[in-house]
Image (cartoon, rainbow, N blue to C red; front, top):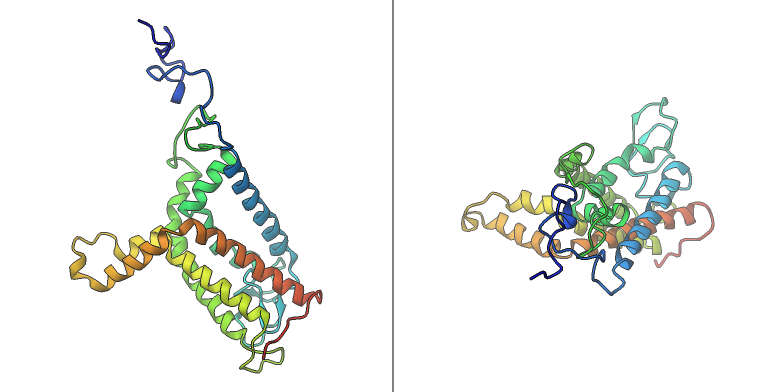
Length: 277
């Protein structure tokens, strides 16, 4: 007796995926009745907004230093054309031949770290490529090769970007310490920008340590946790953070943009940094 779910005769090899022979024949693309498209659309919109903003700021090459604050997009400043930053990480590694924005020299490391991040890969695969659009919704692509071909095979360098992201986060921590100064570089002061930088660096470190690669580095390939109590404790802490990896990814993305925009407002004269003491 026919059930209406048998594959059509003579269609062997004609279709793949959910439409391949042997799969239930359902005319509808999916049976979900909720607004399943809202989540990937919101994800795409959020990522696109950050891409637009960060691109503008990276190429702007201005208003990125307002003593004692330096934008996280421009730190460390590695070009000769950097604005002098008293006490800040201003290293003229690249000579006068570099005429573009110095942010382009350092942003490649945190950008590469986030671009190859497991969560962000899932986010922009679904948001921009619809691969897949959502759970229980078939993707529109006829073929699927995963991350085995160029350029997606380069996603495997995520661990090495983690190694590069750690010293960058360390430098941003140093910038946060320098934020406890006033405009005359006297210590023992705190402003609204100091709090902005404190929140930002805490979220950046939390996101960095919640990374799947970090968790594997500190506790991976151990057969007996009892023989490695320190690494087991680190692995446990990383695991707790890893459970909030998505939330930390978004929170740190917003915080680094807010910190940069705060410096832009102060440096451009649109806003005066209020000092608490």
